[in-house]
Length: 383
Image (cartoon, rainbow, N blue to C red):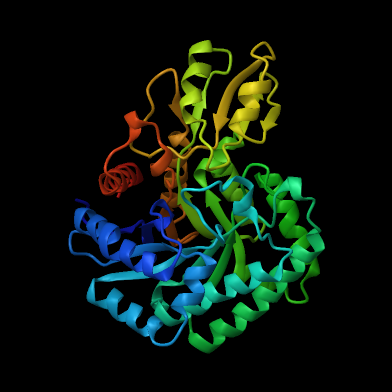
């Protein structure tokens, strides 16, 4: 049990995208069972923050009639509160092929804009004004889609102006976090800085963008890019980009020259999620494979790559057995940065959504896994 659920003066949650739920009725059942079970394991009587995931279907259903008021009453009765929503997966996220579909619709589509507005409407009705209210979303599109960036920027600018009005009306500090991901429209710090420079250049009032549109920094995703956490976060802050939310997460890593490691990584080849593979060579160059099967089929072990990292979220407290390892050192570095910059980001979220596809040796009852990750975060935050 941890002593409190605020961490480094920030709100801490875990993302409920780990639990299958696509309708509002399914989401209610998940909240009443899994989420309250985790609360009982870790909260110690403190208010328990929920990092909610809502599909487009569930969000629309929740906004019907008296449901928002009933949900807010349930939150109050259970000593829980929602301060952030994961708005990256629009549709089904478990038990079916997700892969590239998690980027659809992308930010060129009005349906993505409308869905995200629904999420902020929900936060306006159920969130506590003092916590701020964030939504995380995809990094515009996926590189393979060939998206028209001008349409992405236009929709984001419309959302920012709409959020500004909603914030003025309700008193909530609303903000959106675009989440760099391997092979996303922007995926590393340099591409993120360049995208935001273009976004600001479009805006008649750049300050609205600074207040309302920022970055969701996913420790797994930036570790996959072989980035230094402090350098990346400092670069974003210096550029005036808001750190909307931080995902505390970890990826797989291994030596791509080791046949035993190649054999071990095959256990993580599953058909639901994208598992991009990024390899670094001796000179620092990065080679990217769109998914783990592509790597297993096409990688040349004699190509001189020194390390491979795989977009497969691993529980923060469960290092895989050798010859595999994890990137959780990057998550430790993120927590150290948060400790040194306590006002930079007030929304922290544990995000290991892969419980249902983890190899058997890494599986535990889901509530126990999440509780273990909370304990790891508090132990490594120096809190």
